[in-house]
Structure formats: structure tokens, C-alpha cells
Amino acid sequence: MKTTEEHVSWMAARLRCWGARLDKLGVGVEAAGEKATVRRRDRIAALRTKHHLVQARLDALGAAGGDEWEAFWTGVKGTWRDLVIGFKALKTAPVPRRRRP
Image (cartoon, rainbow, N blue to C red; front, top):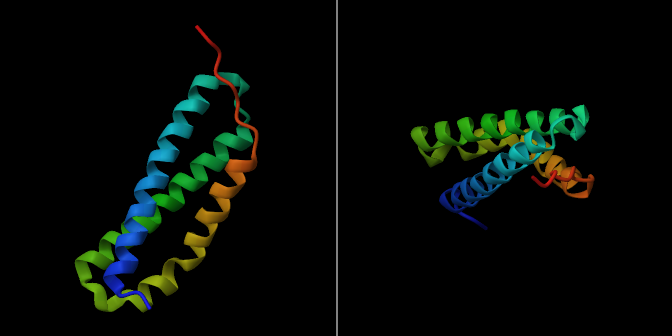
């Protein structure tokens, strides 16, 4: 079984990866302009909100100390699951192509 520090480290690394992916997706949607669907923009915005929520709670856990893991995980597991599902859905959704200059 993983220790609290291992859980936190893994989650922090995953959040960094997802944050970079959200940044890249945001740039892609902006570059697509009107071709990007409102639904895709909304999905990215919702994922960004959930990402920030989990990151803030993870930062608070780090400040409080690792003894609060169970309370932390109980509070974020639904949001974490939504992030995982949301990124999987984005992976399978068609990506708007950028126009070449």
C-alpha cells in the first residue's frame, strides 16, 4: 500500500501533466477560432475548474500535513474521477484542426 507521501507525489505529478495538457488544449481551441465547438470549450473550462479545485485541496493537504489523507481523498475523489473521465472523453473527441498561415 502506498504511503500518503507517495499518493500526494503521484497526484501532484498527474495534476502537472493534466495542467500542461489543458494549456495545450486551450491554445488549440483558441487557434481554431470559430471552428472550435462551444461544447469543446465548455469541456475544457470545466476540466480547468476541477483541476484548480483538486490542486488547491492538494496544496492545503501539503500545508496541513500528511495525516489528513483520508479526509482529503474523501473530499476530492469525485472530482478526481470527473477529471479522469473528462480527459478520456477529450482524448476520444475530434480535435479541431488549426488553419495553416
